[in-house]
Length: 113
Length: 110
Image (cartoon, rainbow over all chains, first blue to last red; front, top):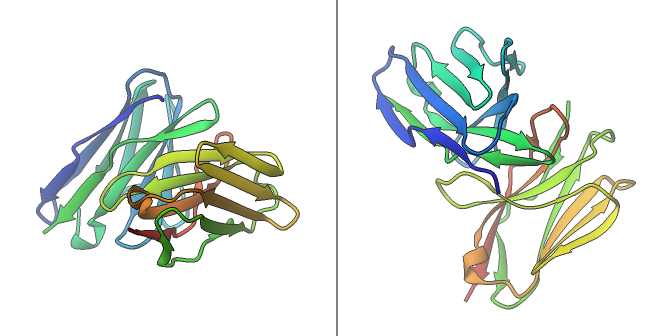
């Protein structure tokens, strides 16, 4: 299947700092990518839809000014968690669709201390 | 609000038996349904997707869809200890992201 690469796989940051997570489609072009967040023992919750060349679409309750999404090319979307707080600690996962299938990145474990 | 419901389990099944995982969804407009397996601390991996009413088989896995009842299931035959994981049911399609259930924790007992 297609490969979606996410980096970094884990990151620890201090409260108040910003963290950037990258999501790349390695062998296909993705005009749309999706960002999910998963808290412990919870399911994946869609945060936003990243669209190449246009603004991201955020789900209800997700602060667009806190979670900045940039989709500058057909193979790269980035999520920046700004002014991170301990409650932002979570597993962040990106996804890209190829035809009918959604392929997921490896996920990024963010811990804010 | 689109919702996907799953029993969180844990569901314990003896090795070699059939594991049956169930899922219901609220959005009658949903067209596509997916089953993902997620190991602890890892990203989900796709097992199967199904669009049409009826059964779809792939190796030891069979997905079943009943749109009238808004019900999706996954059967795992000849269960192996390596099948122990959380199984996520999801609906979605087209340009939309997926709506996931909370997942069913499956334990295959050797």
